[in-house]
Image (cartoon, rainbow, N blue to C red; front, side, top):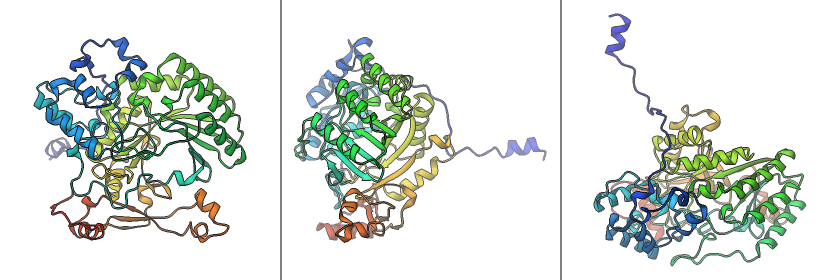
Amino acid sequence: MDDQHAAAAHPAPAQPYQYVRTPLVEPDWRRLPGWRDVTEAQWRDAQWQRAHCVKNTRQLRAVAGDLLTPGFYAQLEADQEQFATMPLLVPPQLLNTMAAHAPTTPEAFTAAFLADPVRRYMLPVHADRLPHWPSHPKAERDSLHEAEMWVVEGLTHRYPTKVLAELVATCPQYCGHCTRMDLVGTSTPQVAKTRLTLRPEHRQEQMLDYLKRTPTVRDVVVSGGDLANVPWPQLETFLRRLLELESVRDIRLASKAVVGLPQHWLQPQVLEGVHRVAALAAGRAVNLAVHTHANHVRSVTPLVAEAARALLDAGVRDVRNQGVLMRRVNDTPEDLLDLCFALQGEANILPYYFYLCDMIPNAEHWRTSLHQAQRLQEAIMGYLPGYATPRLVCDVPRLGKRWVHQVVAYDRERGISYWTKNYRTGPEVRASGDAPAGHDALDRLHPYYDPVDTLPEAGRRWWAERAGHPAPQEGAAR
C-alpha cells in the first residue's frame, strides 16, 4: 500500500482540543422584555449600566419577566435567604451574556439560564448548593487571613516585596464566590460584614506612610472591592502619590469592571486620567498594569475588548486576567482554552492566573479538587503561547499563591494537601524575635482541603465523623 492510500486508511487522530477562531459577539439585550427599548447609547453609558443593575428578584423579574419561571425566582430568593454570602448586584452587561441564544419559551429559557456558566457564579440559586456539604468544615470568612496581615487598615503585607491595598469595600458587581466576602458588599442574612472604619483619605494616608517607611516593598496591588467604585480624582491622587515613592516599581490596578462594566473604563474622563497616570509611570520606569476577572468565554464581548484596547492605548503596559476555577463554570480544558483564546486573541487581555476557589462558607459547589486542577494545568499546556498560558494556583491560607504542582504532600483519600513556603509573612516576621511562630515558618506544613463531596467514600466518612453528622449516601462526587 502506498503512502497516499495508507494515509487515507489511517487518518491522523484529532487533537484533544481543536482551536477555531471565534469572533466576539455582543448579545442583543433587546431580546429581554425589560430592555426592548434600550438604545445603544444607553447601553454604552456607564451611569445607565450602574442605575439598572439587578439587586433583587423584583428587579430581575422586571428585566426577564415571564421568560423565567416562578420556580426560578423562588430558588433565587431561597438562596439569598439561606446561603448567599454576597448580595445580588449584576450589571446589565453581565446579565446580558446569560442564556444569550436560548429559546424564548419560559421552560426552555429557564433551563438555559440555569445551565449558563456566568449565571452560576453571578446569580446562584438554592439548588446549586450542595445539600450535605455546602461549606467545608475548615471554611472561614476571611479564608486567606488577609486582615491578620494588615499593617494598617486595608493594607495586607503578606509577601516580602508585595502588598495589597484595599481602597474600597464595594464593587460594581458581586460574584457569589468572592474571596473577600467577609469585607466586601452589604450584609446578607448569613453574613454581617466586617467594615472599614477609617475615612478613605485617612486610610490612604496611612498606607502611603507605611510604604514610605518600608522600601523593601516594590509591588503594590491597588484593589478593593473594585477600583471602578473609587471616584477617579481620588484614585488618581493616590496613584500619583504612590508613583512618588522610588521604591515602588510595579503597580497593578484590580478591576473586575473591565469585564463586568467595561463602560466605566471607556468613559473619556477616566481614560484621560489613565493616560496621565500611565505617562507618569512610564517616565519613572514603573510597570503599570490592569488586572481583571473573567471566568467564562461568554463574558468576553466586543465591549470588553474595546475597554481593554482603550486602556492599552492610554499607556497601560498590560491588561491581565485573574480568573477563578469553578465547577460547572470553567472546569474542563475546553472551557479554559476557549476563554484564554478569546482573551488573548480577541480582547488583548493576557491570561494570567486561575485560582482554585477559596474555602469560604457555602462555596463547596464551586470548588474543585487539587488533582483536577493539576490535570487541567497539564491539559492546557502547548496550545497557547507560553507567555499567555495561565498558571493554575492554590492560594493556601496563611501562606499564599502556589502553583498547583508545588504541593509537597497530598492525601487524596481525605483531600488534604500540604504546602511549604520560602518567605515569612508579616505576622511571622513580627513574631520571629520573641516566639517560635516566626522561626519555624519556613519548615511548617500548611494544609489545604479538597471539597468533601469529591472524595472517595472513605474520605467522606472520615470528614463526616469529624463534623459530627452522618455521612451522606452519595454514590459519587458531584
